[in-house]
Each structure stands twice: as structure tokens, then as C-alpha cells.
Image 1: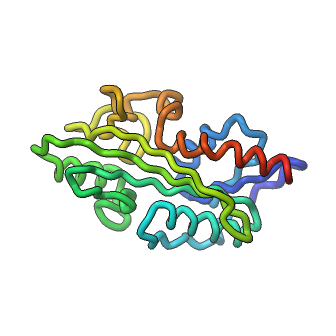
Image 2: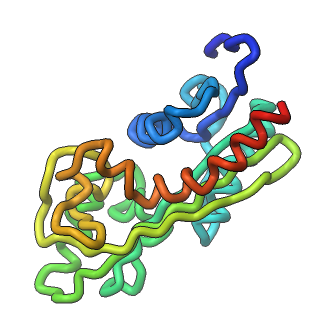
Length: 205
């Protein structure tokens, strides 16, 4: 595990997804914190994400990690809600095409189900939760409306980025630079709203 940087506030990102960790690190780059992730705790078992809501899954991830590590933990759960698919994949966005599927498997399934469908409206929702070992501190949400493209566009990003076009605009997340995406994304909104709470925690620790 990473050694503690003396006197610095420690925050654990409750994730092992390298893409998500990198994005959150970038979004929190201005904070004077030592950022860890569950990659630093290989013995910690993966949280079973079996809750029916984004908030429920995010809270479960944050609480389990906080109790195990005794650190303040930040977790998020993100879903893609496609109107013409009655909100699918929703909270199952990461495993839309089945357990152990790839990002591309998920994108391919979404595009196949929407083939010939004129209504391409969708929205990304992120719920971020901050937890201490003794319970949830707070949660914040971010929502980005948009639409699903007819094909994959762009090579940046991860997940559904190459088929999601945020409103207003005509480019997918994957056609944007990291800085452009991080200035407007659903996850950026949720973490921006969380910053005042993090600053308050840092001042009291």
C-alpha cells in the first residue's frame, strides 16, 4: 500500500477500474489530498453491486471500503438511461451485455437495440457518495442529457463515451479531449457538487 504523505488528508477512491480512477484523479487534481484507490488494497474483496439504484450501489461501495480501510471513501455509481429502451441499461450499464463483458460489447448491444429507432434520447446519471467508517457523510448527483449516436465516433474515453453525444452539441464524449469532457460530464457535475464537503472535511481533520 502507498505510504502516507505526512500531514496530508487521505481520500480513498472506492474503485478498481483504472479508467474511472484516472478520471476522478483528474477531476480532483486541485485538491491537496493524497488519493488512494482500491488498487492499493488488493486484499479487499469486491463489493457486490446488487442494489436497485445508483445511490444504493454507490453507498454500499463507499461504506464497505471505508469500514475496511478506516479511511474517508469516495464512490460513485453511474448509469446510462436510454429513453427508447425504457431506461435500459440503467444501473446495469457496466454489465449490459452480460457479466465480464467488455466496453465494446455494451456499446454494440446498445447500438443493435437502437438500430432503426428514431428516438435516440438518453441521459447519463452519476451518484457520488462520501462515507466514513461510521456511516455515509453525504451524496451528490450529476445528470447529463444527450443522445445515442448511430455509430461509434471518436477514440478517446471509455465505456459508452464513443456513442453518447451530450446536449447541446454534436460530438460524442470520445471526440472530446479529457479536459473538455471533464468540464461538463455527469461525473464532473457530481464531484463538483461534492467539493465543498471535501474542503470542510479537510479543514476539520
